[in-house]
Image 1 (cartoon, helix red, strand yellow):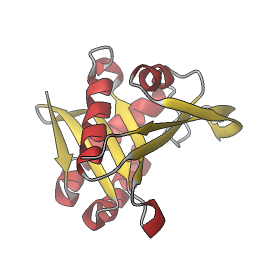
Image 2 (spheres, rainbow, N blue to C red):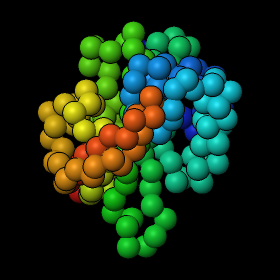
Image 3 (cartoon, rainbow, N blue to C red):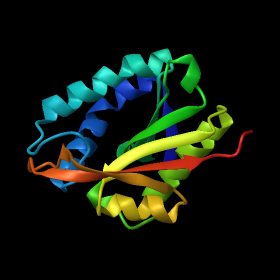
Image 4 (cartoon, rainbow, N blue to C red):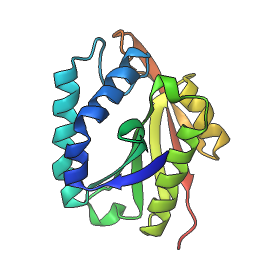
Length: 173
């Protein structure tokens, strides 16, 4: 399995696989911004819509590939304001249900953290559903909870859930 940073063309080339991963993640109950059932065409359109952000340098997307199959992904979103260029948001860390439990989520997280530090980012932040399996990953990877917002986002079933905000300081390189 390899982890590759996708440029805009590669993202579009893998958009079908990424859409399948997104649909699987939502079907598995993860709160990543979509309601179930997620139509594959919607998932495909969402990923295709990220290509412009990747081309502009506002997004950095990595895909974990097992051959041609996308088994995981992570994205960094970079702010465009001058006072926030030291930070980035970690978004859409997803691992296919049949690839979980093998450390892939941790490897994707480390990849994003290392790339952020190499780009001069010294602060990462994210939000995740409170008490979700993802929360365990972030805590054990050294992320710090900044607090909980009740009823922040609907889970895939449409039920409002609390969200925990996390941050992590990175060493400047």
